[in-house]
Image 1 (cartoon, helix red, strand yellow):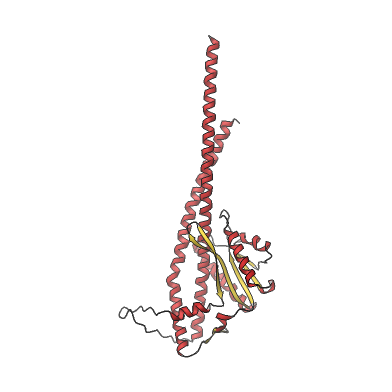
Image 2 (cartoon, rainbow, N blue to C red; image 1 turned 60 degrees about the vertical axis):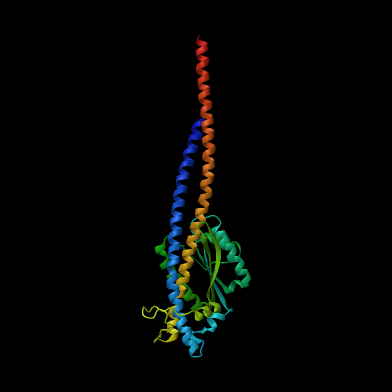
Length: 312
């Protein structure tokens, strides 16, 4: 194969790769948008849950009691202050590649935070969401209790959240796990994400106090500024348990959504770098091709001229 044919093949290959990278960029950008939209749509639902907790907290405060029983826990005391016992950790990575340092970033952060907690291995249970973070965790000496597949689309998140919630219930009932942490990459911009830690249990006391201090948002069209709190008839512990289940669902759904958005942001950034490299290579190949082609044309002309002169 001549050098010109080789360069032509290299140019065609680079152009094909460029088309693939451009398509991946478009898909990553679309995915970022839909996952961001999904997370944003949770805001109003989350506020509704918080206002429900606000009503129960105010009722407990008015009755001079802060010891509501929820599934065997004393609320808010044990749910917000327990710092002993077994710990469950859920770390969100990816199953797909070409997303830069996405998995390394969250793995390093989670490992550093776990070291701060100073928990012995027998007191720690880890769930990994996404297979590409497993090697980083195992290299650091952490055993993975179970691995979950990262949803491939928005429609798959709900079923995965429900599955993990069932495992969390098992954690608490059978393994006496009292602390649960989520680690995931939180999207900051279309091409940048940073690691984030959420304490799912025990509930953060500062968060509870903030909810209790909120001003009631009336939905009354007649008295939109009414501060009258609604009442409830079901047992307060049943109501709180139901609200907390919704809170856990929202927290896990947000973790999935933000992690997937962050994964696609990292992939978009990687594709932008790849696209720049391909463009540079195309420029280099095209320049070499044009130079060699011009040299070949010149050689052909010289041969024609030489043959003409010899014939005369």
